[in-house]
Image (cartoon, rainbow, N blue to C red):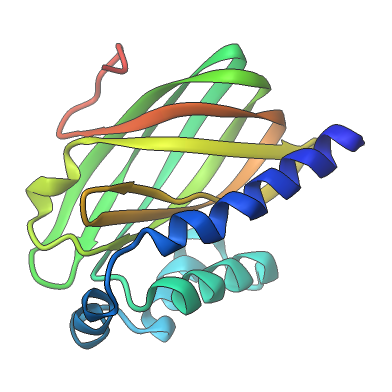
Length: 193
């Protein structure tokens, strides 16, 4: 039980620090005029997760409060597992206000005191992505999860000005924290490099 409390505290402590690295307020104001509204994102999330997921709505509301309107989002599924060293694989569709939709894949290793396996529906809010080609890079990740049957988790990833806020509704058994990266690609990869 104390491990769960430590993981939750560490995750909550990391969230504001990562959110503050998002850059000047002008960037958020530019996104406000060209991004998706809260209602549009909530409708898309309801389509991905199903209606009535209260924890999901709160997570998205918090992301909006900290980052403003996203100008793209990804809806998909992922699965992963870890026993000290972990792997994660996912696929989804990138929805962009300007460039339309395109298929994306992601994969990544992780290292740390993390044990278990899970499968998740993933909804990733994307900020300051002005060319969809910019998504195809490695985004550093520091994450913590603690659930025995299922749960909602939120992470923050940033590379240069592009910020990703993945919201996951997972099922499985997973406890721990890890460091790694998410590598987005145009095609499925077995080796997460």
